[in-house]
Length: 361
Ligand SMILES: Cc1ncc(COP(=O)(O)O)c(C=O)c1O
Image (cartoon, rainbow, N blue to C red; front, side):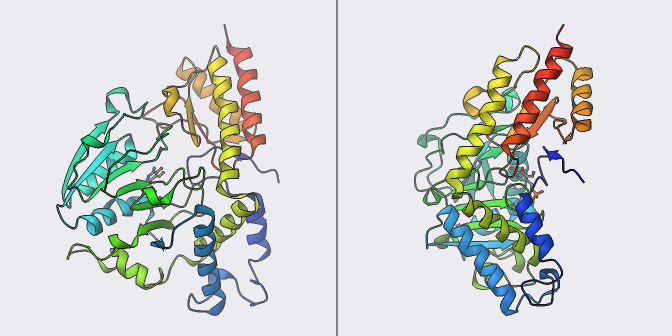
């Protein structure tokens, strides 16, 4: 069976070595006589897995000792509620930078729990750029300020983080966690759905500065309370055991390849290949401002819906799947997360060149 290059925005490709290892261990995890899926989460074997996953994530992301790492469920969308429920502690005010569909959803949800202010937005140009901000625009009394570091649908990313002063910066890092080096000290809280650069969907990673724990609103459900999750080592209830195991294998893979800095170097090379082609193409164009280009999600389009449709269909036949763009942007989108090999991007660019030659009038 030939594997395809899957350009999906998520769930997306996982490293083949990870899948093979999981396959080899599926019936009998290291002599235990059981699959990880069947194991008690209180067993010695499983405790090693979850502790190992946390230790590896701390190591590859350089998470300082005054931060907790949590493995939760419910996807990034649950964090849209969990963050305000736990962080609206004093003023019950938060500032948001609105850069796309996902930040919009985070804003709507946060409004249910406190006062939300959009301090900058790129909505005027269909979120094709990242708005500039300076420290003065942020409310110094806000409980937090929120950004989406990479906008999966629109294909933009923050090149530099906003300076929010002493206000904790909260980041939805779902679509670029582990793809580039970040200084964790710059954040109060980071959250990410796993299904792009970490592992199976459902698992949600949260990295939270310890002083932000314990200020939840009274109505916060027990499962949504960061402090309770932290005190119980992410095992207040049965955690997503198998997803955490796959995440551990992915963290090992990142470490073996040289860590997040090495990932960033390969990701920059992959993205540059595609952007260079787009910059020189007479058929395809990118809707995104040059200084806001994402390393992970690259939207592009041909001049007509017919050509876009033909491109997606022919690429699929050639073993490059899920290239159709999101309906709000149109055209195509290539999501090239960590597990997309350089060969996948090379094949896509060669295919685009061929398509251009055939269709350019
Ligand atoms: C940036 C971003 N935030 C949030 C989400 C929602 O994630 P989930 O489906 O895990 O709730 C996504 C999903 O693609 C995303 O890309």
